[in-house]
Structures are given as C-alpha cells and as structure tokens.
Image (cartoon, rainbow, N blue to C red; front, side):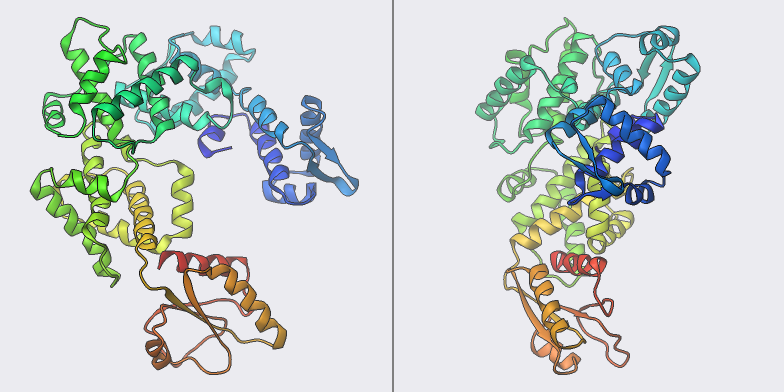
Length: 487
C-alpha cells in the first residue's frame, strides 16, 4: 500500500495489520513472526493476535506452519483483505463523502462510524496534518475541506489516484469512463497533442472536475493568468470546443465561470503530458524567446558540470518544456510541482548523484520565473528522471566499467558472475585481477567506472570510482548498479 493511503489510516492496529500482510505477501519464502516482529518493531504477542484477527476476517489468506512460519496461500485474496482493512479507516469514508457533497457534523459522523467523538477528533486532527500538505484546512461544523478550489481539486485527484490500487470503491464509474473516452478522442482530433497524454491521470481529473461542477464549486483564475494562458498556441481553442461540445461544462450563465473552467482543463493537460523529443521541441520554439533561452542555458549547465556530452537540442527541449510547464502550472498552485512520495524516495535513493546536482542548480539558478519554486526536491527528481531517459536513450558508445577485485580462486569467478548480471549488455565490462590498476590503464582503455574491493592509497583515478566491501554485499551491488545506470 502506498505512503499516502497508509497516512489515511490513523488507527495503529489497522496500520500494523496492513504492513503485516504485506510483509508476508512480499516474502519469497515462508517468513517467521520473529522476522516480522523485528522489522515492524512489534511484540510477538501482538503479531500473533493480529494474525488471528486477519484469519477470522478471511480464513483462506494465511496458513501457519511450525515454528510460527507464515505464508500467503492465495495472493488474489491479498488485495481484497487490504482493501477491507483500509476501508475501516474513517478518513477514507469522510473524504469520499465530502467529495460527494455530503457534510455531517461531529456527532453525526461519530454515530455513523460507531466511534466516540473523542476518537473522531483524534482522527480529524490527523487529517488536518494531511490536508496542510495540500495547503488546505478542515472545517469541523460541519466537517468539510476548505481552501483554494484548485488545491481542493488537486487533493481529491491525489486521493482517488492514490487509492486506485486499494479499493474499487474509489474508482471512476462507467459514466466517467465513457465521458473520458469521448473527451480524449475529441482532443486528439482537434489538437496537435499526438496522443501524448497520461490516460489514467486525466480520467481521474475528469471525475473530480465533473463532480465539483455538479456541486457548483467553480475555479477562479486571475485575469493575468487567463491572458497568458490564452496566448499559448497548442490547446486552448480545442479545449474551448471540448468544454462546450463534450464535457458540458457550461452549467452557468456566468461567462467568467465558464472561461475559468475551460482554462483549468487546459492547465490539466499541461500536468499530464508524456514528454517526447518531437513534441517538446515543436512547442518550445513557439514560446517566449528570453525564457526559453534561459531555461536551455540552465539545463546545459548540468551536462557542463558533469563533463558529459551534451544531448541534441530535441532531447534538451524535454527538460525545457517540462520547466516551462512547471512555471505555467505554478501560477495556479505550487502543488503541481509535487511528485508521489514513492517516486521521490526511489529516485533519491537510487540516483542520488544526479539528483544532488540538479537540486544545486535549481536552488542557485538565475531564471526569474524559477526563483520561487516551492518544491525543489520534486522538480529535481523529475529532472533526474529526464536525465536518465536522455542519457540511456542517447548512450552512443558503450560505457566501460572496470572491476578490480581481490580474492581467492573460485571467489573471483563467483564475483564475475555477479558483475556480469549487474552490468548488463549495454556496458563494456573488464574484470582485472592479475595486475595493479593505474591511472595510465584507466586512460588507455577509456574506463568510465572503476569498482574495487580494496583500498588504494597511492593513486588517484580520473574516473568514477567506488570501493566496495571485501566481500561485496547487497548494498554494494545496488551502488554499482546505480553508478552504471546513472552514467
């Protein structure tokens, strides 16, 4: 279960039971309660009670073995049980009801959820912390979400998109699916998007937008943002037609309301492009010349700093187009700069070298329109992922990684097997054990990465160098894999 959904489960027991099931399901072998106890920092007695409660809920899910060994016997039941546990959280029910326009006071919610008002207040205080991340507040009488309509819509999209893998109760219905297909086909026929739009994300946006319009909750966009957005050559005209002809957004006689909603649809497309070289390069050439020039210069700085061959202009335009869209979207809300928690955590862990350079460039950049980026981490993560995409797509000649390992007989052969599997076919590998590695050797054979399992005190190597443990462990191989992937 993803980080956001787990945050919506304030009940510690339910939270723990979900993690318990996931631990058992992910194990490639029967796992002991001792191992789970150590990982979750929970007593054996508590875990045994949890296992019993889960079995009472679905008796076919878990089989106990001797010595308290556990395994999942039917993986198809895992999602069902996780969904049933998650939906016990009052915050799931409260969020969905607020979305539907059903507002209850504290006593009414306590009665409906069969919990005390004191427990409900504790849960709602936890909910306030979650909403604060979206620049929103929680009203208690009745219980409702308050704040900018843009941020409210963003929160609901984030909620439903995140809970998609938890429960079918939070997914778009058939009416929304049909509306989405009709809408998407219309845009493809009346614009130059060439199909490069994230389908499922837009599907959830349509669900959120149509519901908010049904509830007469409208977007307000300032005059200056309206003016700038209408000047964009790509989609506004087709969006205007789409709003009138397909989505039926003209629910009000107020022309300003309708104009704002049409513009909001256009912004949503900015947030859901799938970036390609041809599409990006065709757009950035139509934009404000000074801004685009400054963004290109900032992107080129990354490759200059790392002494890397600069990609062609079409590849660079992906970075520029993304940054240009971030600038536009930030006029509505800085929330559009954000990623999902899991994406940020994974990229920082696995590609920290690239991330750190981008973070430093963004933090010290001189582009006026980027001076107030609120979520530098998130934008840097996106630039890191684009860098990996461009580097691996335009890798040119194979990179050369040199393994210099010290060890006895068969162990060296054993390490070669690991090295070959880590490196893969797109990288040249040399395994050197019969001579000392020197910088002359590095230069002569154009080595890009040196990996060794001993300390070298008398030579500096003019390439990326990593010294692993004498007996390389999983963390070492992960680091090697990261270096290969990054370069």
